[in-house]
Image 1: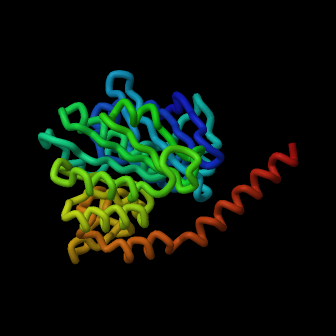
Image 2: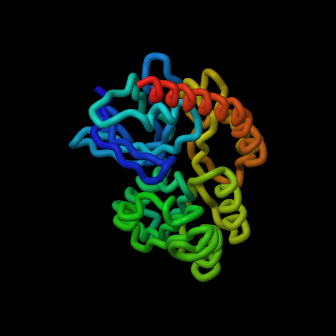
Length: 284
């Protein structure tokens, strides 16, 4: 169970795995996430589902190596099995036929979790305009899947190596200036600062926006409180109350500070594991 059926490397630090998890695949809905553990002594890694196939029984995850746990995951090969793969968790996206156009925005690794949202919106008859972006061309992921899930796909890179030069918010602002009334709802997933800026643009055009908060998580049930975020002046838990919330209600400053809380420990753990791997390689 939880066998890695397929593995894909997008860049030096971004990978995708297709996991054999028939029960999760059958129940998964857009916006939901899983928590996996690589081995008996491993840490829990929360990842929003990028795609799933209930008939074939697999779930696709996309992740970036930022610490020791994600490095361990990236070193696993096809045919190996995860220790645990729990889900789907969280509240699904509020998706329906809105009778018009919807705007979908994915930044960096956030392109992966925005994909099932776009896919379902299009299936229900919405006209889906998607914007995806990254720092440079090599970091654009899942372009073909996003094309299939969208009626229009626009791409931005910070350095101009692919698509329009600039940020996803530049394209978002241009679209809302031209056809704000036609846009019935908006979703944005990506780094916290990107979602904050997307929310600011949406507010400037008096539009609501959904954002997905991939905050620090431990148990995925709300018991530990690690994923708490301030939404509308109230404490919410991203794992059980989210992960999606209306962007205008989210205290992004507080969330960003909490996200940085364990960065030093994460980097230290990553360096220790990399040193251990180098020693093992040198010893034969």
